[in-house]
Length: 312
Image 1 (cartoon, rainbow, N blue to C red):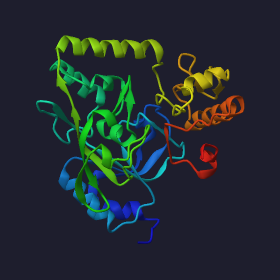
Image 2: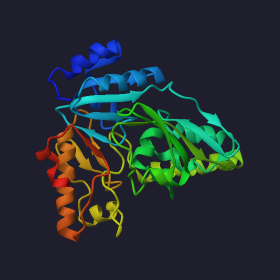
Image 3: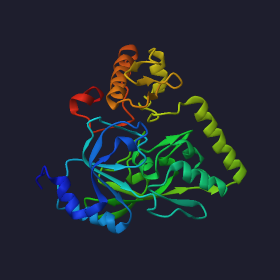
Image 4: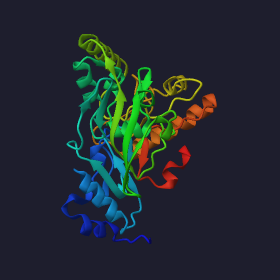
């Protein structure tokens, strides 16, 4: 189907007031930088998801982004000329079984981890330090502290906007690798079932406290996206960046963190272009110093090809 310059208005005519035009997007990320989305919709029910799928059969859109917490995104200062889709916080239910838990796609991982720990259900403590949603975590195979989604996941419920159907998938179906899954941009994680086992609530809470304390001691707060680059197989990205003498490298209001070299901090009022410039310099300098190629872990949204070509 041919794309039309009026696609956003055509989509709004089908979806009504739920669809917002020129809505803030960068402000919804942990960088708090970047421009607006041409169209933005929050989905509150299966009926609304199915309605969106039907509308997308009639209107060709240039780009689609499924948004979680925005904790792993850098949005262009020029915004995103596409449709952003987000599940409502109220979508789905948090349910417990004997050795599993079903977590809604829009639920924050730290919230799920703490709820399980309070019930003495162990195995998901690692997720307390991951600032994303369950759906976003499945999409990127998030992980930390010796574990990852791939190791915890039993199955996930996925809605495919292209085929307008719900599919159930397990880890073998998701083509997991380091910080990657095989989910397409048209697939929404409705819920994920993770493995847990009975433990002692106090022991579970102690594990959470240990992880939180470690992160506070070793990682900066403020405006950042967590790890900016994926770890190469040889050494952690932070060690490569620090070894190249890049801690404190600054462009505009963006700076390589002096606490953790794989974090790029952005001061209030800073621009995404400054973060991107720091990333590009870091990649080039690390390559020159070590021969290692750093690949972005943060997802670049709305940037032109010439802006991100250095990362290809």
